Length: 404
Image 1 (cartoon, rainbow, N blue to C red):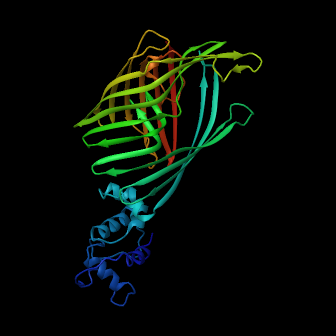
Image 2 (spheres, rainbow, N blue to C red; image 1 turned 60 degrees about the vertical axis):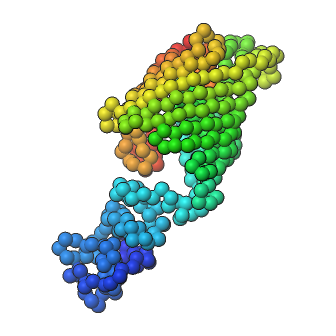
Image 3 (cartoon, one colour; image 1 turned 90 degrees about the vertical axis):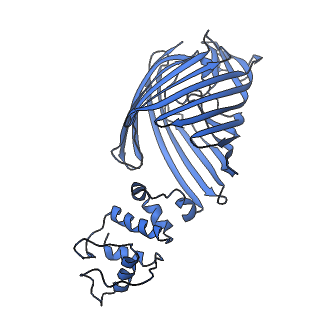
């Protein structure tokens, strides 16, 4: 980027100076077309040139140098939202806050992502999966305090030649503030116990208050349950479903330590039994037996802290009021992670591992990329991710899980 081009853009920044200083650059003569603008920007402290009194207008400028000019213009009150959005990463490294630039620059923003996944399976879960998921996000501002988000998702299954696919409107919610309370309402994401209890969409509302100590309450309908299975064999399958979910949690930070405690109720549980249809080679969709069950009530506590720079250890414990399929009702999940791939930073990477020992009643819709048994599971996973280029991230994970 030539400095002459940068200067042409800088002339429209709206930067003003109370007085013009004498020409500070020896290589910009009085007759130069940009003489007045250079003096104006130099007097305002937006440009400095080089230490040898030259401006260096014919030299190539780095993105970092351009970000410095934008940052100084912002400090002077110039309206440079478009430029600041373009150089957001560099400005962030300079410590300049640009969190609200997208809202100011464009009222509506459309983004998307594509995720391809392939998994080989053996042991109790035989076969493989081969899937492509595409998402389109629409985000915009309602006003200064409220925004809306929508997401359309398409899934394609390449496991066989059937070409199965579906497209659904998966997210539609608003979030904002009522006084000092942050509110989110609609079909949004519900993540409970780092996703080890539940990590998918729900139709509901949540409210949070606080920063270092944050209290959150939520209520809604779990829309895409992972089906809490309690019986399954060749001819019989059992499922437990829930009509509603509600709860509260408290998250707190104390230096490098983060702690959480929560209480969740999956309400109005129903157990359904399905028979296998040999003619259709599939389980019937209509249950032959239905039974109302007690609510599933889960307490959880967790802690996470930094062992060293970029090295984090976490542990979560859950206790359920119910037992599904086995005679246990609690869970422990321990995680260890180092750094992590950042989509915006090529070459960044991370490695991570988890140990699981979870009763089936502590799993409703688990976040893991693998598959787990029908009666709770025990075992471990290890994984690594890497950013090959900006916004192109790859990951590989290995699971060794035992159906309890």
